[in-house]
Image 1: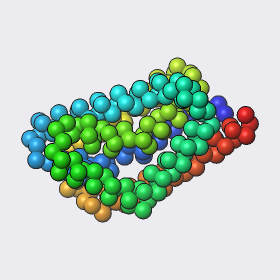
Image 2 (image 1 turned 90 degrees about the vertical axis):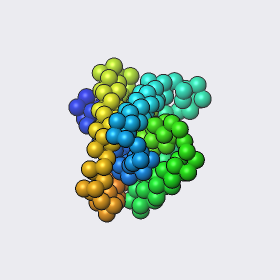
Image 3 (image 1 turned 120 degrees about the vertical axis):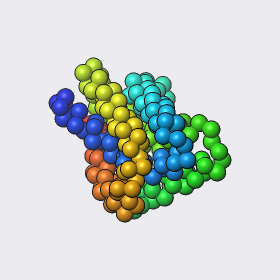
Length: 211
């Protein structure tokens, strides 16, 4: 199925925004950085976003080659990726993801992790399995077109830039939204991600049957 560049751009942006969920990460970011000075907090945010961007860009550029090396077909990865995204979406809808992120944040504080930009912020909260899977699937949908691949890399940069902006305003956002609004937003985005995940599975099944 041929996807117009604009449609691909919108699909990539919506998918990564929902999977990464910048606003939903505010409580976790605030939890591990609230004791830091403002300048240090922004430094952590910048490093985390750069690390996550590097991981996702690498997944987009080298993901297909890695699958080929492992003899994994793209239809199989689409189905597996769709099921993984469906699992993440289910966690978002039922509130499990917020609890898991909070637990990972607490573990990072308790263990006195020095580089909190890498763990738990960049990995697994920002560039976790779901985001990596979504990036590889989107790269496959570009069909090797350099324009679409450039769009995907630009979308990755935009999403991580949004994360940095949100993290920079974490204190204000946390106070404005509150716990209830964050939970409601996460569940609404989870419903959207469920639909995207199901579409990935359908596309994978179609490709497998056609092959």
